[in-house]
Length: 173
Image (cartoon, rainbow, N blue to C red; front, side, top):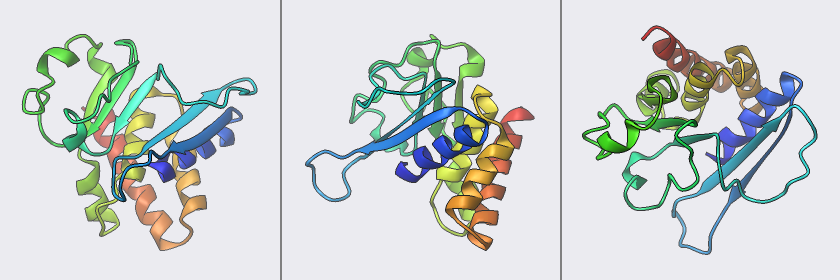
């Protein structure tokens, strides 16, 4: 998700916005959950601290839903994207998600699309395509350009295709 936050900030910058992306690593063991933040604004961003009240939350690993307090600070007017094919009921979120407007929450088969297009289970690009589709905060074209900058050549093209697949799957539902 660190790379995803960076690519999202680049996509916003491409569109003329100000953006910053940064990770937060605890002192936990190697392989512990990582949190990454991205701020986007139409004016200069001077704040340099973790985002405590996010407008959107992207969950790359649904196994963390009940192990970590992921939803702290997320207002029900915000956006929630979860990388899974499972239903909200199966995830144990049935009651929680009813507080959100239906078009503000989304499950995304991002890992599957990453495997299909990239050949590896790295869902970050597909999640950014889904983010663009759900929030309208950045355009798909900007996300694809940011992906191609981060991953030049075939890898970038394949990741951009995964992002487009996620975007299209949401926009056509």
